[in-house]
Length: 114
Image (cartoon, rainbow, N blue to C red; front, side):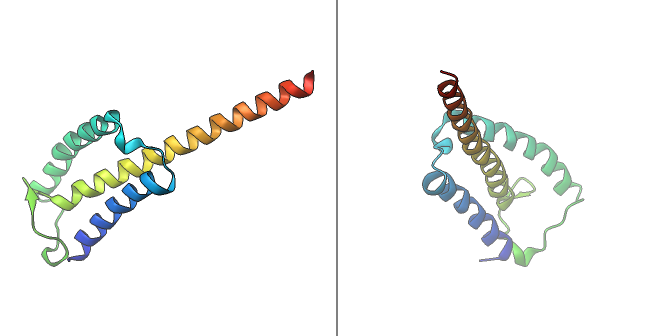
């Protein structure tokens, strides 16, 4: 498999594993995530489509599969998924941790006052 394709697939699988088995946020099972991803992909079609159609950005053929959606290599969509997924999964996980730490500090502070 070409290098760019391998990295794109690997990053998407890593994000799936991170959500499912490591941080266990369940984010990828939510409809809101997929709606957000849809908006991201619309923006990617416009911006990346322009950059690859001009051509401002070039892809070296031996490093990717050569399958394109319009002018955009399919691997770019996997990277978009991986980037958005990674950021939102970390945001969700850290937000839950911070909220639980805040509750813990509030309950210990309330207990020490009484």
